[in-house]
Length: 456
Ligand code: SF4
Ligand SMILES: [Zn+2]
View 1 (cartoon, rainbow, N blue to C red):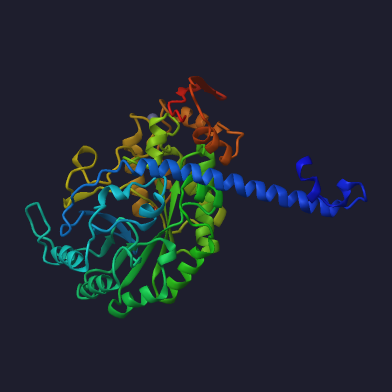
View 2: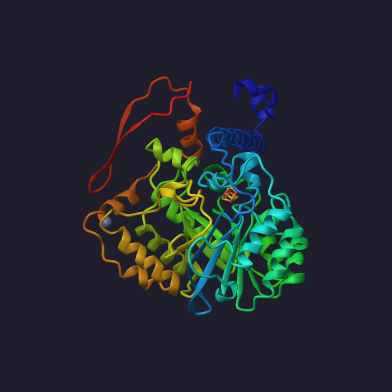
């Protein structure tokens, strides 16, 4: 403080006691310091993400072939129906190209980096859906057999930089001819959910449209530093919901569960409060909790390789659903647990991803232990058909891992998030080879070598 004496109010120069002014000055000083630290932490995260993105292979994808088509089950208007998920080979997410993208996402793995997908390319891809020619297996395909159709582009379908209005108009005008299709789900970042784009859709399509929007967290520090979402002002979520409702469309929030840098319990609490905010503060019609999975070239995956991250426990999902239902005093909300379906892949993967799957297919998803994960996943699928938390409650505690998960929830980290980032990415480590053991109430659960990440 002494360095700044010249700027201090009179108290410092001994001419009086102006406590309020001093407090205000000190508050401002702290605010500015905090902002600087926040900006520095953000820069550290972004640098790390960009360094990883530079390693993303530039694969020569066909511009006229779909990235993937898969069929799975979906709960719609009280019954289980078939859903087809169509993933267009696309120009890739703009946030990803500009800023490195979100910490848990590696969608750019599936986009051609040096090529441009044109309107004609998209039309050719889409026509292969309409005439069924995309199908690589035996059998036929008729879009009318699918009451729910997802049209994804590994980015924002409402961003003109990624896909033109002309293309959107074409896709939705053809969908209007398929009366067996009751609902279309698309995805977009909130800032592109604008009335002019929604009007393009509504002018040619009169069915139900739901737009999935990545909120991830309503806590700004978590959203910006842990997710690297690049959404500073959360008012755009409400604006997006209002615009969608004006055009009689549905708003779906994606809430990422357990981003990097958070403990298990912090992540549970954040997923609960974010979901509650999505329903109450912004007006979303539905929430999909998306447990972090690991894809190549993502920062989350990098942290996992360093031994600094574990995918979320499935047991935690039960706490989250209970927490949301309790806070909202409701049991019949449209809450989905994303990523758990019995899917049938019809076509599209060029097999460059994990296990010869889709290019964005994760190599690890949230899990318990090898003894009980599959059983829990079956109950999640059941929950996604009913939204009834009893389907999760009926899973018996596993004798191998339940108490470990309970212990994990007791782990506390006294550092704030900025400090955690600085400790990992901000220091100049020449050699750091530290044994760390987390000792919790019931057992010693994790011993790990830290410090593989040398930064000189
Ligand atoms: S999560 Fe969405 S916004 Fe973030 S990088 Fe991936 S595609 Fe882009
Ligand atoms: Zn287990």
